[in-house]
Length: 400
Image (cartoon, rainbow, N blue to C red):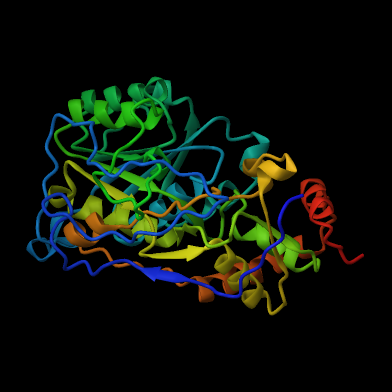
């Protein structure tokens, strides 16, 4: 029988000050946490065994105070995915660049007339065109044809997860004269560690598709930057994050969280990801040849996220814990986050770009809940079949 447990504590952890020495030059202290009996773990604390052709260069953020007006307006192409949680990154990035005076074309994978384009953030692309941006659709393998010979100073690939899908964009960008190449990778490529948080330079999974892309970009471009995001929230996101918790809280259902609930994770508002990317465009020399964890500067526990969502909704929450293996369910299908400590810090962005995070989950989740209710999701009929299996095994009653 699976064990039932609960915890009343909520933890938020703040990353070290950006004034600390560069993590690539000096070892920075880590937060060591015991591993719960429910958590998967592996030992991996050594520097990355993968070396890119161009050495990572760190500069003091105070040395670079270039703004868009001073550096000149840049032409930016965003190759944007048509699915998953990353599509909203390109949407926010485009809007922020336009607001800073740059020219933007957002290239969305697929067909403009597809059903996917009826969903956020694609159904809000008028916000981009009304601000002077351009939108095109097509196959990234034919990027040169789709953009009709246009040239760009900066190209961001926010679509591919392996070299086969990204190589055509990289090769075209190089041949077309792009000066800077940016790539949205993933913090998921870090190997699990007993000493969170993940910092730039930590060991990555050599067989991960994103790793091959990162290495190839460094071989082709002299000016490049890699961004590794985690979980994110924000209007226009089409992948459930906070919604998963709201769905249960508003229906007075227990919230089943695997493990102890004390696992640390990182959830950033997408505006922070966008601001980091924009700084990389405007401070291209500083950003060049660097990898950035594109995340918030605070961690949150899984239980803490449930309580923050409940507070934002103004409702109580009942949290129950379970062991996925004991119940015989796949935690990846039952829960939106990893059942382990999965927490990266944005040390490089603070040190190199002078970036500052603005994510405030307590306040940001209030905004997210308002939109959740506005679109009527709080009254939408839903089934919770996996939840019901978990709760039945735990002998936890559900209010009817």
